[in-house]
Amino acid sequence: MLRRMRGADEIAHFITLLAAVTLLLITALLVYQLWVLSADARAKFGWSFFVTQTWDPVAGDFGALPFIYGTLVTSAVALVLAVPLGVGGAIFLAELAPPKLSSALTFVSDLLAAVPSVIYGLLGVFLLVPIMRTTIQPALKKTLGFLPLFQGPAYGIGFLTAGIVLAVMIVPFVLSVSREVLLAVARDQREAALALGATKWESTWKVVVPAARIGIFGSVFLALARALGETMAVTMVIGNNPKIAASLFSPGYSIAAVLANEFSEATGNLYLSALIELGLVLFLLTFVLNGLARLLILVTTARGSGVLPS
Amino acid sequence: MSIRLIWRKSLNVVMLSLTGVCALLTVSALFFILGYLIYNGGKDLSWNFFTHLPAPVGELGGGMANAIVGSLKLLLLAALFGVPIGLLGGVYLAEFGGRTIPFLVRYTADLLNGVPSIVIGIFAYALVVMPMHHFSTLAGGFALGIMVIPTVIRNTESFLRDVPRALREGSFALGANKWRMIATVVLPAASRGILTGVLLALARVAGETAPLLFTAFGNRYWSPGWMQPTSSLPVVIYTYATGPYEDWHRQAWAAGLVLLGLVLVTNILVRAFLARGTSYERT
Image (tube, rainbow over all chains, first blue to last red; front, side, top):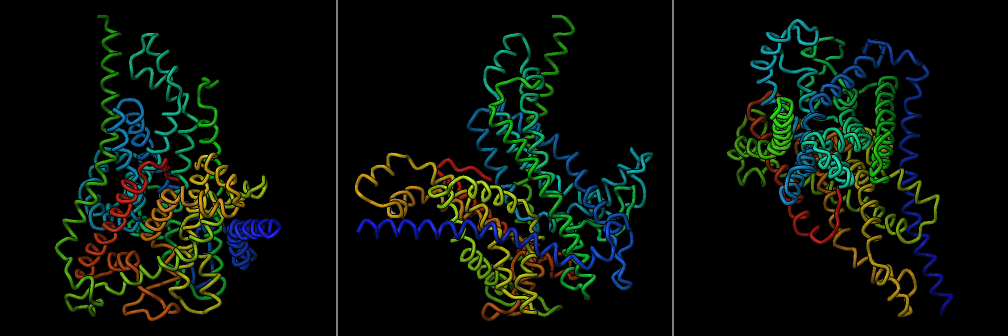
């Protein structure tokens, strides 16, 4: 009887272990598939894949540079807009708002994070693009037109529009993670600063934010990883034109967008394998960023941030 | 008051108000999005939208019954594939795990959670579509299922860990062996939290478009069985919004409203009722 019971335990152990190992196998298989299926492109183009600008499926000539450029530029625009907004909002929620209001607003921000990306794309195409073309881009050209960033014709679509849509999408992530990290800063820190005569803002900006700074960086990396891999909303507003331009008004392309547009119609092994190599690049980028982000967040929340940063 | 003090006090007020503006701006985005979708999509929602197939191009009317059913079938497959693995894996992590394997599994789950959904689409394409030589509901469901696993596994683990030790010991004291203790005491105690995680994970993949583009693909008609390409709400929104026809754009707004409504209602209900009393944290 006892032996049978122990046998049942072992079976349960084995079955659950199998499920856990399935996750490992799936991930290993994912990496393996990306690697093997991109073999043709890797063999043919080598490292020059990353510095070549041409993308010519007809001639069988593939270079990833315009897509990598577009991915990085749109994500950079998104970060520039989203980080101040998200961190500012997090400061309000963690330091100022009464607990009830704070949790209600966090709830709404979490809902915002759940909005599907195709919905952002829909609003981007029909609402933001026309506004960009008729109002925002001309205004930017008039005021900041001396910068190469804001020159050229206003199409409405392009890097800037894609970056703005991305910014709205990643703000909730910056906001909720930064809030967590700020709340983890010990109370004593704030009270000590206030006791020394600091204003509320001074205690927040000079004591609490620096103490939480590593975790805030973590939230930024997390948001960046999401922005890099974001597909639908970007595809719908970036313009889908593989070119590198200094102007943010210019239409461009991103890695995820070219995958979304061309993958299902890719003819020939080389074409498909070049696209899969792009997928591999995207995978590696997000892999590194996510790892880094988790490490940073772990470091700040684990040590309770009671210690002032050196 | 010295000038410096006035400066410090006004800086205090200005900056603190600015943080309030940041929070307000962020939060108001949701209400704006919802309002704009209701304004644009609400007038084109009708009974036909839910019961009819898409009309041929140029004809008015028609609906998205096939896309709605397609999305439900994809979600069902995703749940059938992803939830058992996530659930059992979570039980392993919380109840059986040693040292090395749980660490690896947790790390991998977080990694998989961060993989862009379009890359998951490539994976499902390589694993299911390529051997079968055609797009299918099965491939789409597989892709979504993979995306469900990391959330469910991490969530299940954390809720199982929250079950008090006394419950386990009580169960052992009554002579139960380990798997009985897990199945009849620990799992039921954690069930609300686990269900919360499962539903939120499903709500998240319900809105995913990218992994479906080259797995489930799309279909203007009903998709019989599981081996044919199928339409789904997110993909239809994408196709219609980027298409050239005025009528398609109107339908896209209506479909967007339906999708957003489904996702938000699920989220609100789950978070407000099911998650009450559980220390649920979004991953």
